[in-house]
Image 1 (tube, rainbow, N blue to C red):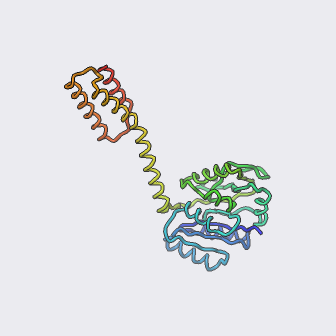
Image 2: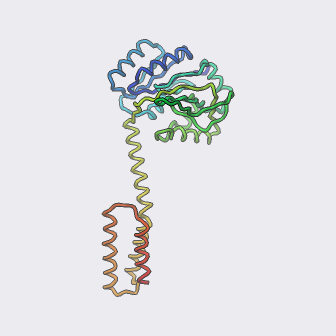
Image 3: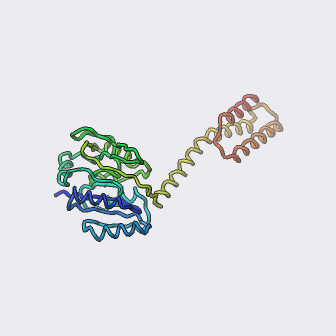
Length: 293
């Protein structure tokens, strides 16, 4: 028999988490809830978590000893859970799907190529309401991607894909894994009666793992962009040095030395500024080489 659970990632949760658990108790009675805590350090949050654990036997609680961040914690949790499917929710959501877990499992059994179900999200921001991933169809229709904090995932397919590979913010990791799922021939569906409410909290937390990964990524792209910007200048330097050394400008040895020193002086000024090479620099050396041809 196929099994399903709910996964909630949390960090310094508020009372919104209690409301979500009340919704799940109402609509999905008997379904286990995996609560992954990414190292909450707020006293009020700790008391909320303790109260929840004491009053709800369905809670499977796991707390990170090392702070990992939202995405890596979610990735780790899905690999650890011993279930077939998982409902992934942020701790500030409200569950509004009036269907039992057996009906949700049957949706996957009917569609063997189904990788994930994308939930439509009614988001309350200040005094406005915004719909994300809205779907007006009464039956399932294929959609492009899903929101990581409001979806239902086939765990086995998720593991075959290796989980989230791109740890970006604002949906980068979901889009990345969606593209990889499409490459495998799998699909993502949405439907109008599969939705939840979201009351955004300001406690999104970047873990040490995510910060170190993003810094490394930023450093790599910075080095790459600098290399691409400076490559034409280095080529220009090699050409001019070669022409000066070989005497291609038709100058005497003394005149060649003067030009070469002037060239080094300008290059030193550019290096001090540590700025990207602009067209004027290329134009200067191009004119210089033309003048001595």
